[in-house]
Structure formats: C-alpha cells, structure tokens
Image 1: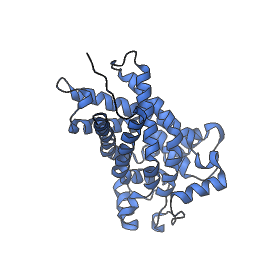
Image 2: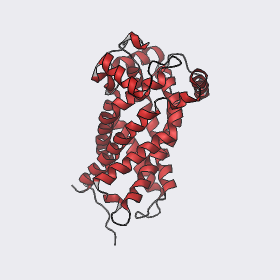
Image 3: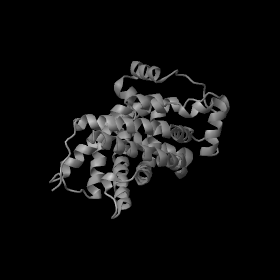
Image 4: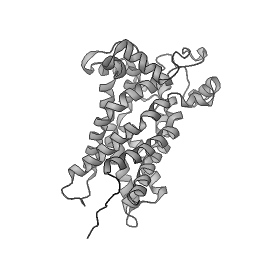
Amino acid sequence: MTTHRHNLLPDGVLDFIAGSMAGVGQTVVGQPFDTVKTRMQIQGSTAHYKGPLDCAIQTVRNEGPLGLYKGMLPPLLGISAVNAVLFAAYSRLREFQKRHPDDTLRLHQIALAGAGAGAANAWIVSPVELIKIRLQGQFTSTSTGGSTSTYCGPFEIARDLYRHQGLRAGLMRGFWVTLVREIPANAGFYAGFEGAKRWLAGDTHSPANLPLARLLLAGACGGVCYWSCCYPIDVVKSTAQFGTRPLSPRGRYMLDGACEVYRLQGWRGFTRGLAPSILRALPAAATTFSLYELTSRLLKGA
C-alpha cells in the first residue's frame, strides 16, 4: 500500500519556498541570455546588431559585463511571488484532475494544469516583465542607435508608470498579450518537463526520484518546449511593453503589434532573439526544475 506524505510544512508554504529557490536560480543563470533576447526583439527596422553574439559583445564592450544583467532586479525581487503562484497553481490543478491521490496524469492533463497555472501567473509576471524590459532596452552608448539611460532603477520606472498612466495603462501595459503567451508557454513547459522526466526514468528509476543529471536534462527539455510554444507571441509582447504609444483597447493591440513587426521586419521579425532564448532555456529551465524538485524533496523529508 502506498504511504502518502505527511509534510511538516503546508503545501502552500512548501511551494512558495521551493518556487522561490527555483526562481532565483533561473534569474541568475538566465538573465544574460534574456537581455540579449529582449534587445534583439526591440531593435526595430534598423538593426543595431548583426546577431545574438554581436549583441552580447557590444553590450559588454559599451556597458561592461553587468550590462548583461540589466533588468535583473525586478524579476529577482518578484520571483518569489511569480514562482510561488506558478508552482502552487500548477500543483493544485494537477491534484484537482486526479480521481484518486495515486493517479498518474496523462501529458495532456499536465499541459492543462500548466496552462491554468500560466493564466494565474500572468497577473504577476506582466508588470515584472514590463519593468525588466524597460531596463533591458536602455542603451548607454548612442553608437548602438539607442538612447542613454533614462531610469536609475526598477522602482523609478514603476513610480513613473503609475504616476503618469495609472495601473491599467501603465503598470499592467501588455497584460493581455502576456496572458496569451503564458497559457501555451506553460502548457509546453510542464508537459515537456514531465514527458522528458518519464522517458528518462525508463524502467530503472521513479520519475519522482530522478538523478540530478537526468533531472537537469528534463528541465532543459521543458524550457525548449516553453519557447517553442510561444516565441512569436513573446516578440509582440516585448514590442508592446517597450513602446510608449497608447495601446489599442480590448487586446486589439496584439494584432496591431503583429502587423507592425511584420511590416518592419518581415517574417524573420517573429524569430528575432530566438537563439538566445533557446540557449537560455537550457540552463535556466534545467536550474528551475532541478532546484524546485530538490528543494521539495528536502522539505518533504525534513
């Protein structure tokens, strides 16, 4: 007979702690790739960079190595809330679909739980990423075609947005496109991770106790699935959140933004920055899932 776990910590607290640890690791590991990805996406019709590598080189040359970590503070500060909501919602939605506690969900059920978690997470991740993108998009060298920095940090951006545009048009700018991105992205994220974990477990290991190396590989697969499911939408999101013009109401700006990307850059515009995103996904998602799983195991065994 299966023995069910009896945690010393409530599930919500466990998810918060494990999710926070996972998020911090993800941010530190993935931020340089994310900065390159964002700058590639928002450079418009006049390309400042020949490619991702050139973007990274120019950023380090003009701003120093810390230039690759621009915009890291907002996700680092908000990562506890973001990951706590994401992993807690995912865990609850998984349990909700089970008829019995020992049931093993199919991958489409895992994807459904991930999609629901992404929808819940969008409310928090949207303002966090808005501030991050505004910081990442600031160039300290006019030779790149950008402008000098106008904001000193995330709190100044948040204060300025709220003061001049309010909550809905300011801090929540781009929420609907973030929601549209988060739903398929997290469906792929969790289904990709769980599918890879089950395949890597084979007949010799339990998916719940996978060795670290295989856990890292499964996490990397989840990260690749995340971006594969949402990247063109993410381009539109970055463009919308970096821009300053008022957005069309009721989410119509998503279609307007997609048309604008196509008009300025063609179909290639929807894949600009994809390479650094995939490169980021490998270590960042591997770190995220591994830290979450290992922290959960540690806390459950405490």
